[in-house]
Length: 492
Image (tube, rainbow, N blue to C red; front, top):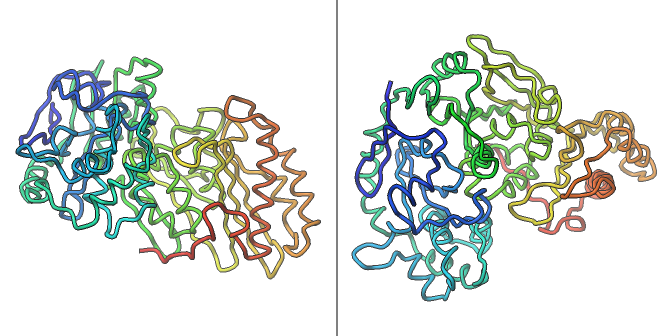
């Protein structure tokens, strides 16, 4: 067992042995290192001013992704190459991204600029060429600019990414890879004592044993939710078990009949496989938080935190997903919809953790639609999220699975609505009305600052009508801001 975390920083391996389990990466950079180029803005992973890049070895090469340092635990950088804005320029020469920002007047006050530069750095390194304006906009969805405006920033990104990437990090890529592989020892990590610790088990068996001994510990996967407990709730978290080093817990198995996603697979890693189930799932994942959130947040974490407004759970419930959990040596499975019992309460015993989620692929006669409605198009919490899986026989609905998020204390199916949809003809809109009316029996919507109950009730009805209209007419250009629904791509 290793009693320290190790990561690469500016060409050397850093080992940290004594730190609070709730120490955030941003605090380490600014207060311990005094690397103050990285800024704190919102302290909740929304504004992107704190963005840094983490490099990890994947498929034999070092891949860099942006993360929000303000809600990432220091312990989570174990095994990574940590790059902040101070590291980009070399020998007095600006990095191509920095030079393009200067050339295109992409900065005014400069407070948000470091985070923007770091997001664009990961785009510069990892994006396929040619880089489109849409790709730049997606990259910047998690970065707010308070004074410059986005047009010159986007222009700078396009200019920097005109050619293939070429910087000192690429020139040193073999050295960086060797360094990271050298500290990947596969050992369990435990820093602290039994009353206060940061732990990172390396195997599922080690995780099960540790969590059985400390069922009061806080499980952390991406920390995109727990990070806010620390920064906003000032939670005194004394025991942290980070799941990011558990071998195999992030596995994605895209079989011909079903897709299985390990609990610690990030949203970025799962995006392509989920999108292969249906194009609407791909679009849902594209709008899931920001690139920073998708790089850190996990599929299992989004489910296990039990949020009534989590986007992924309603879609997976509509698809008929099943969940697998483990406690000690015992493994059990249950339909995902049965996991959510009440607000922030799940069918999960002390010491039990989510292993994976699996979902069968759509059948030949199945149709799927899911829609997210939020105040902002990008990086926003849903007011209402609706998902619909309909089995069609000819032009009639033979069976239906309908689920919503944001309408109740948990993600929830709509059984009365489903019953009223059976036998409905796509060619007879009047026959849809009983299903619309049944929504009132299925939900008494939340009424809060995000949306009123009346608004949610109306939107829920309209989303079901939208799904039926698209299936009836075969047209999506009438109902979607982003154009027609793309063709389904085969799973990799």
